[in-house]
Length: 201
Image (tube, helix red, strand yellow):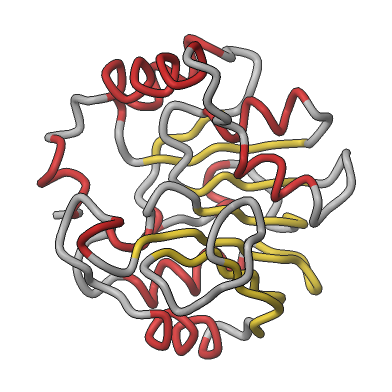
């Protein structure tokens, strides 16, 4: 069972969306991830939002002109995404078993983004498999971006994956570290409890 399922029961889509809607109304920036991704690849690029949740990142990228596909395991989150942007392609799938071709999706993405603590919330022991599956969905030269917490202050669950372990998973999957930041605003990584990592296939 994924840590996400254990944490939420996969019934939290509406609550999750409401929390970000309230942040946006209060004037908080809620599109940092999309802005970060848009600085990496040009408009029109194919983007896979892995663990897309309610679609906040992907919907913004689509508005900016990107060709996006969203995948998530949580039906409650996807229901919100589909309601907000029914014209976009949303798929329910476990990332540990993700095979784009079986869903009728071409595995030639320019960018795969895993925002929102996707990796620490996976089922224990599936991290390397998920990295391998997402790497396989990239075209040669494509980028994978993952942002996640590394300590209890930045996670809703106990820390489960270190940066070195994540880098090892990426290396085995044929990915090379390009850059690492402390935030989605591209602040330099300083060894703190949150990291945004960019790897290239």
